[in-house]
Structure formats: C-alpha cells, structure tokens
Length: 112
Length: 112
Image (cartoon, rainbow over all chains, first blue to last red; front, top):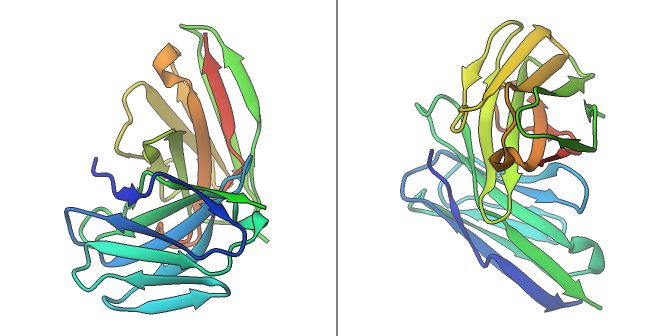
C-alpha cells in the first residue's frame, strides 16, 4: 500500500522555537489529518483538513491542506517540552476504500 | 471520553506460537482497526472491521487474521508468529468512517 513521506524524519529543537514539518504524496487526497503520539501512548488526532488550501489552527498548532491536494504542512509555534513525540500525517482519498494512509512520522525532541 | 483498551502492554512469544492480541472499545463504535507501527515506516493497516463478524484486509494482512464476534471487541491473531512480526501493534476505533480514530496505547510484541 501507499505511504506518505514526512520530513524531517526527526528534529531536535530548542524550547521556544517554531517547528515546521511536511507530508507529501504521489497521489491526491481529499482529507488530511495530523496525529501526535506521546511516548508510550497511541496517536491522538490534532487537526483535520477537508478542503484544498484550508488553514486550520489548534492552539499553537497550525496545519494547511496543500493546494495540489498532494501535500500538507504542520507548524508548531513556541515549542514547549510537552510537544515531544511523534507527529503523523494521514490522508484519505475517496474511492480508496475509505482507508487512511499514514505517513512515516516526524519525531520531535525539545531541548530545554 | 472514548477508551480503547489493549489487553497487554508488552508481550514476548516464541517463533511458531499462536498469538492473540485483544482490543476492547467502550463507546459503541462501528469501526475497528489494527495497525502495526515500525520505526521509519509509520503506521500500516493490517485489518479492519465495519461491523460484527465483518472484516476486510488492509495493506499488510499476510500472516494475520482477525475476529470480531462482538461489537466492542476486535482480536488480532498471529497464527504462527515469526520474528518479522516483532512490532508495536495499535488498535483503533471510530464512530464513522476511518478519519477520527481513537487509538489504544499499543502492545509491543517481541517474537524470539
């Protein structure tokens, strides 16, 4: 099955810095989602995007649905220690059996 | 809050053993899913179910089977465990579709 490519694979940043990560696909998706996995837990949904060009915020997090429908971006402003974890993008395509395709993940580590 | 409970946090099995991973959700969700998570590969869908006694193959069903005898319970079965099935297994459920998934905390399976 198809997988989404996320970059960077991991990042080590200072507390207070802004963070950007992205997710790209070779095919079009109609829904993009971003999940976060805390250490030792399952992923939790952060943001859902349903329209090309859509920009949605959830606190310090902002995600965008790329205009081409083949990519999505997640930004975290003023990072804090609890932002540590793995961030996954996921896409859903109509006619794809309603299945979610997950990205490879971006591991975020925050230095105090 | 939705609770998805996986029966074991850590499991160690021997090659050739039959392994059962159990998952229970308490929110009357129609849909349940089994994923495996491997570093650098993200989450890959093994099997899913949209109704009791119904199952559909995901992207990597080989070597696995599932059972859904009751709405709240979805079991993943490894008929004859192999070392390449050492992984983190995540169960998830959703009310509708497969976008807003609620995940369990995962079972780390080691096959020796």
